[in-house]
Image 1 (cartoon, one colour):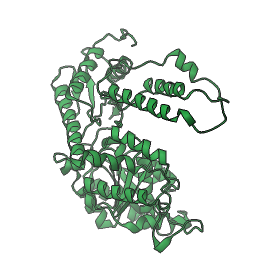
Image 2 (image 1 turned 60 degrees about the horizontal axis):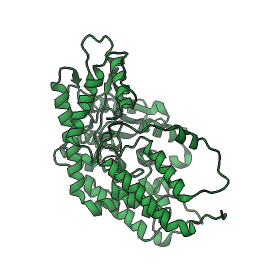
Image 3 (image 1 turned 180 degrees about the vertical axis):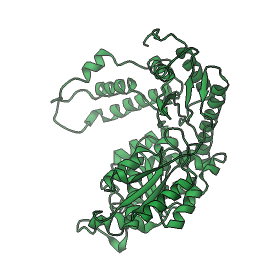
Image 4 (image 1 turned 60 degrees about the vertical axis):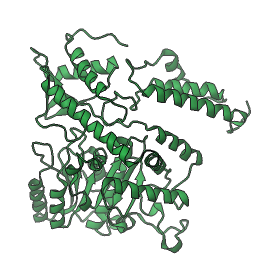
Length: 474
């Protein structure tokens, strides 16, 4: 074979074959599988091969790639309810193909692509109801949160990006059930893990405003500088939404940056029935949202939005000789953590153009109704228990209660493992107040009410099997 990186005469056939593989995957996602595909010995051996020195047939290699993907856990499937999944919106996948084919770099001005990203930021802000003046797309919620908290650091401690934090005692405040990325941000930004104040939660698992106020007052009395308050708009554990308006009142009274971590739940601010949970959102200084979660597009497509356009430039801008600044226009590298940046906005831009905002609102509302249906059904069932409060968004922890079982935590871990082996529904466990719960999360436009009902049916079916009677591996 010729030593070349061009597909040459095989290019059109390769594209056609790849399209057929994609079409097969999309058809396969339309309905649930009755079991997960196992990794064959043949495939395992294929994935143990050493570095190929010579190329091989492109069609054969594409088929091998398809085999790997088909034997992987795909979050796009309608009964993948573990963690907080993305669902691989079809138009988003096509957008990625187009964007990656052109391989545009948004570090500097990329002409039309730069304007497309700015337009998509505006659309996203309108969709969420947040008055963003500026924003950018990132690889995920962790980077979005780090970006926002870096801006908060520079406002609370001006010049800290130059002088460091050696003479300061900063603190950031979040719910006791905030995402781990907040702690990671504190570590990477130099605050240190001990600077994170875990504020107690109420009976609905939301941050308690008065506990926050007391923690800030105590820190100020002790010479500590509050940098930011992080309100969680949809906790990973239970989907709870912190009282943003009450937290905004406190932040305004103390002059503290308010960041809303809405990586999972913030798109629900657009749906009429859940919008009241997000009252006060427009008063935040910054928000983060993962469009690759509850706006259904493929990973990676997160965004950070800020109310004050100057804050990001104060935090990230450099005057480098090799970066042009015409007419004082900012480049993306002046407002973002990353330099080389792919066109992540394309998938959301194209999705909103093709489907329209109302279709997204309707799909989000459907997921919330599925969660409510599961909560009601589990609550009415004699062998399930649920949390005291109904789900605020689309996460529904529940436990299987087997009569005579002396260790419900071990039992529910076993039920979860059985469901994962069984393959008809894939869920994950969660530990809530020291107890093990089954924790389905609905963030897929393909999931139906029938899938909700079968989830409860399978959990009970496998939960009622004796402790040593495991179902056969599919």
